[in-house]
Amino acid sequence: MRAKRGRLIAVDGSTAQVIPAAKDVVRALAAAKIPRGVSTWDASGIFTDLFAANGVMRDPSARTLTLLYAADLAFRLRWQIRPALEEQRFVIAAPYVETAKALGMAAGLPRKWLDELFRFAPRADDSYLVTESATHAPARARTYLDCFSATLQGGSGVIPPGDMRARSLAYLASLEKRRRIVRLQSAADVVLGP
Image (cartoon, rainbow, N blue to C red):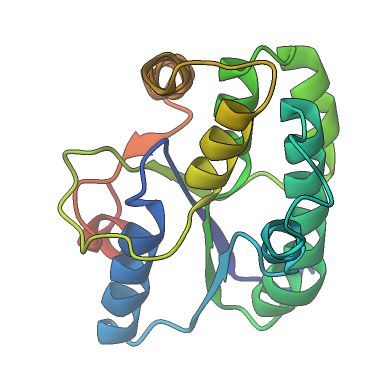
């Protein structure tokens, strides 16, 4: 007999609203008295250390940033996500895999390489897309999108921010069209189902 486990809920998007949207979902799950956990990017401190280094790592490439994101996600899976799933909790991962893939593809990384890199991450039970039209509290902390965009803007492979955003949104929209991700209209969608 298979043991019960929790649910992994991915909240992805190319907007600074991903983390605030995830916090709204956590509050909705709490109100519904559903056991929950949350896992946000930079749990390992990799990116905090990168920015605190003040020039030790100058202008990392999109590939380097994506590898660092994968390392951070491996940390999150080991110390936050899997333990919470084993405790039969709902775990909100914000962002999860698709945000990193969207930004990587927008920067010109091959889809096949990205798929192979993130093969270690379990597929989410439910995947939600956060867009600018979502109504969430404003983001105050630096996000992976900010980090990725700002770092690439300072490097040699400069991609205009509008192009980066349009390319990553196109990838996420293709997932929505294929029904691999659902647009998050409100945090109640997660509790009640889309």
